[in-house]
Every structure is written in structure tokens, then in C-alpha cells.
Amino acid sequence: MRWIVLLWIVAAISVAGMAITGPAGDDITPYWKAIQAVGQGSDPYTGGIAALKAYHHLSSHAVGTHEPLIFWYAPLTMPVLRVLSWFPGWLLGPLYWCALAAGFLLQLRAGYAIASEKERRWLIYLLPFVVFFPGLLGDATMLCGNVADILYGLILVAAISGWKRNKWFWFYVTVLAASVCKAPMLTLLAFPLLVGRKQWLSASMTGAAGCLVFAVQPLLWPTLFHEFLEAVQVQFDLRHDFGFGPAGVLGRVLWHFKKPYFPATTIAYVIWAVALGILLLALRRHVDHNPHLREMWIPVALVGTILMNPRVAFHDTPPLTVPLLLIGWRALLLGQKRLAAWQANRAAAPSQAPRRNREKLKPILVGLGCFAACNLINILLGDWVPMELPVLLLVLSAGVWALLSAKADSPIPSPEMP
Image 1 (cartoon, one colour):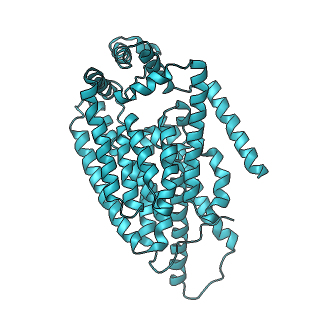
Image 2: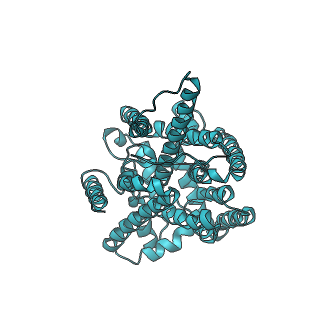
Image 3: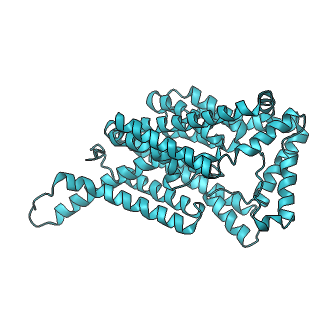
């Protein structure tokens, strides 16, 4: 316990140092401006849209000025912003950072719950450093202050009782509430369908409720909703903020070659979502026939679900880190077992088995090598966006291979470290 506490202290001091010496709270700035605008009786969209358009029409951005971020959440967030405007900034700031820290810890809690008892023996020493490697790549994502960190923490903790006891009520409530800020989070409703039982009706009703909540907003706030759509439009047209999913990568490529991104990105997303959905549902049927695979299936289902987001972005990577780590580790263990069996079958006579600890080190060294190589490429590229999607697809593919390769009559390999 002393070592664990020491590691958390080291991580906390490092995060504080990064926040003080480097850029932090980029996403908090548009939130605060929106709160101030609503408190003064104006809308939160106009000022940000005008500033972003002015930035791109003037040549000032060529000499080192920073591109302004805008508020582009739906008008239904206005009542919340109005309530927050009653409080002073010196109070809201610390409270929000505490909420972000709590959201991140809840994400770790959910990831820890996915791990087996043997995996938790070593995972608990790595949890303090997950903050530095969201999506397994080194990045300061957590310091941006995006509200998604809070939302994902609440959603994933609510999902624990879902995959353990098939009780999904609070998961549906939190996803529906989160969709008010980020409508694409409704795609998380696929998770109960993949790991729960008899959830089609509940998930469909929650999805319909989320769509209805979005659809009534132009009726309640026609002017605000029009400005909200304009904010979304300039976010794509001027900032090219497509995310790093397959459709987002296509959007960036089309923008690079000065081609229109619509409707190509929409078509690409539909194809990707349908193909991924079919794959995940097929894997679900495979797991249903083999209860031993359920432990391996949950992190794969979670990663696949988040990748179904139409605009998977940097703030979607922190909740993926621990599941990706578990998927990679389990796939390496199974690969080691398959390789050992293949070598034993090829040998004319049984050879002396190597030392047990030495055998255990092999998947660790392979995993560390892959981790280091991906982060080295990420550093050389200078931008985590081109590398994040290949990492996610590689680990997800490893998880799919492990599920399909595991024998139906045997449990998964023992996830143990020396």
C-alpha cells in the first residue's frame, strides 16, 4: 500500500507540474465564456462563431496567435449554464477541476472492475500513470478539461452493475443525460446489447428518448438551435475537427485535398458502423456459447462500442486505456500459449521446459516493445491523431483474434505477471 500511495503522489505532482508549466484547460475557456454570455442574457454561440471566423479571415493566425475554441453544445444546456452563472468563477473553477478528477477516477474504477483478480495485482500499480497515456499514447488529453471526462466516469461506473448483475437503469439514465451535451454518446447504448441480456427494448426506448430530446429543441429554441447548427458547421468547416475515427480520417484527407467532406464522411461512417456492429454482434453470439470468454469479451465490447461514435475524438480515449491494456495483455498470453503448443507439436522429442519466470517475461517484453514503438512513432509524427486509430484497431483486432482462438472447452489463460 505504501508503494501505491507513493506512485499516486508522484503522478499527482507530475500532473500538477504539467498543468502549471504547459497549456491546460483549453476546453474550459469556451465553457466559461458560454456561462458568462448566458448570465448576461445573450446566447453562447454568436461570440465564438464570430471570433473563429475572424481568426480564419485575418492573417493574424499566421504569426502565432491561437485558434479560438467555441461552445457547440445543444441549447438544452442553457438552463444549466444559467444556474452556473450564479456562482463566481473563483468557486466554479476549483469545483470543476475536482469534478474532472473524480470523473477520471471513476473511469479507473470501472476499468479496474473489468480486470480479473490476478490482473488487479499488477494493474493497481499502473493506474496512477494511465493519465499520461490516454488510448496507450502519450498525450496531455486529461488537462484539456473536457466535460466528457466527467460523463464517461458516471456512465462507466453505472455500467458495472449492468455487466455484473444485468441492472442497466442508471446506465440508461446517465447516457440519456450525457446526450444532452454530446448527442453522439447515444451510441453507447450498444454496450448493454453486447454484454447484457434482454436489453433491446430498454436500449431502443432510451435511444428514442434521446432523439426526441434533440428533436424538440428547434421547436423550443428555434433561434438558438439555428446558431447551434452554425457553430457545429464552422467547427467542421474551419477547425476541421472530424475526430480520428475512420470517417474523421476520411474528412481530414478530403479537407487536405480541398474536397467537400459531405456526404462522403457520412457514407463512410454508416459503412463503418454497420460493419463493426455486425462483427460485435457475431462475437456476442460466439461468447454466449462459451461462458469462459465473457471476461475477455467485456473490454472488447466496450472498445468497439466507443469506436462506433460518429466523431470519436481525443476525449474518448481516456476510458479506453485500461480496457486496451487488458485486451493486449490477454491476447499476448494467449499468443504465448498457442506458440508454445505449436513448438511442442513440432519437436520430435519433448525438450526441457524453460524456467517459468523467463516464460512469463516474454509477453511483458513484447507488450512493452509494442507500446514503446507506438509512442516513438507518435512522437516522430508530432501529432497523436494519425497514430491513435491504428493503435485502437490493432488492439481491437488482437482482442477479436483472442476471442475466436480461445478453445470452447477451456478457460482463458491465467493473466498473471511474475
